[in-house]
Image (tube, rainbow, N blue to C red; front, side, top):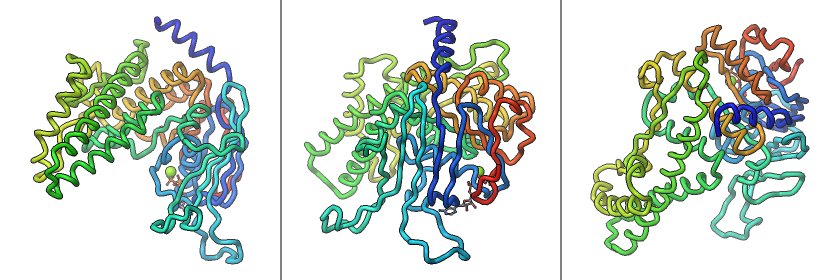
Length: 405
Ligand SMILES: Nc1ncnc2c1ncn2[C@@H]1O[C@H](COP(=O)(O)OP(=O)(O)OP(=O)(O)O)[C@@H](O)[C@H]1O
Ligand SMILES: [Mg+2]
């Protein structure tokens, strides 16, 4: 499909509204009770440090599969009562997030809550208590969180990502894998299963296991999963490359994306089945390495490399503001891909996104968000940064866990 056709398709989809109409939080972080009636526009949330801006974005991220934008422990989210609160309120209430949502103008309700599962509930002698997140769509409990992805989707930028291009590859790899999940719900399962097998394999070797058949069967399973993971990552990079800033006068940089990983690179030249054989054999050869270090070559070591294309500059050598702009380019490309692939618009969760951007880039970003015609929740301590959207956005001010306007 040529780009003008893609642009027309994009516009057709975003003519229909997708996003949250009403959001209700109960005992979630610093919110005892919060209800927000929202429109499918940019939504600017301002407030002082610690007022509860990021908590709102985190709550929304729990309407999608996974562990939310902070990757938090479920029990940490439950509201901690301040020392001057009434002690008579029933203790033990779990947190909940509920929302009335629109998906291409069609209404649904989504709810999620913390549920404690105890020994009595499961009759499992060994179980003390575990935290689980239950999810309901239109009041019906669903067993697979991935199901949520069919109704609502969210893409986020957080201040932690300001350091994404610095330091080791692990956060970049997770970032890329999250971009893949949005298209390929199986990818989450694949990466979790791979990690599980990887740990099991290392433990067996460290404990002196000599059972070659057993080790080989784990290596074969790891190789099969690993090649599927690598292939899905490559596909995602190809998808994003289609959409990363094509307008020559775009203020956001053109980006080159690369995967630095043995398995991903090998898929350039060899059929998947051959790569799988190599991977399995390579794991066998590396068994001894497990005893000396944990650096086993494979998809667990892949790096996601980002370059400022015009400057031919690796992202880690770009300035702080340039790095933020590269991230914005990637996220905007992901947004467009997702609209086309899923047929409905994702919600954008942009936490302090204007930090490090100069005025020109800040306003260009706000214009792009407005033009995309979707719901974007944007937080900031500086309301004056959003003058450009004065008549086009909804503005909320938060003070100490309370919506004051
Ligand atoms: N489980 C919890 N119960 C009660 N309060 C919590 C809980 N977890 C975090 N908080 C508090 O919620 C408050 C708001 O946090 P949040 O991260 O949303 O602030 P913010 O408005 O984004 O601030 P900043 O501008 O500094 O990013 C903080 O004071 C934090 O300590
Ligand atoms: Mg914050």
